[in-house]
Image 1 (cartoon, rainbow, N blue to C red):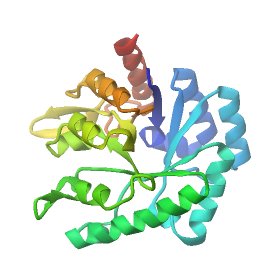
Image 2: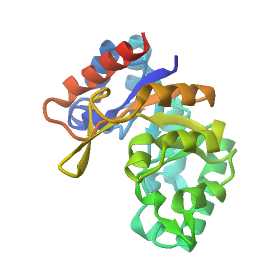
Image 3: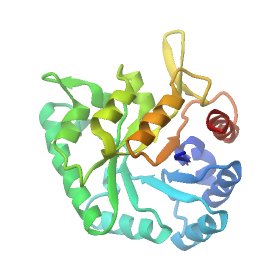
Length: 251
């Protein structure tokens, strides 16, 4: 079985208020890893101590482009190395970097440059998709443009299965196409109501989580990351429901 992590954006308000306490709660729920979406000025030494004590791993860090350039990138790498995280993930592209085919080609080179610096420092770099990368430019999606023009050894893929499905693509086809370049999967579930789609707790939506896990494992995926953005109740309770439902599916 792969390891299940929680993208802490799912519990962002609690994480911002007290990151260490939030990670402690998430570990007690049974998650094997956490994926960061900001560190909120938490000293690296304190974070590493807590993660060691709770025996919970680092499943990557979502890091904006502003933190992935120049001296900021050096600081980002140093902090993540100190907490034991080897995976940096760019989670988003500004619109100016993705309006045209040429934008995607230029962005791909920017990602290659970041990936090279990460590799030189013993880190792994990846990009996380939303739905906009699946718009087509002369018959080719932005997603394929990005990953067709980035070097596989420099830029890995974190495939968000929700957003790929939202854009009308079967995530398993993408996993099979890119194979071991996909380093982790976001497996947030999807519900459609009144023509609108939203994320929902694992097992209450339309994604075939069991198949995504199987195909991911067949292609070397290690981290399966829960992320939820829409809530009816308490996000922490949703996080607990998600890991409980995953355990029911796979036990």
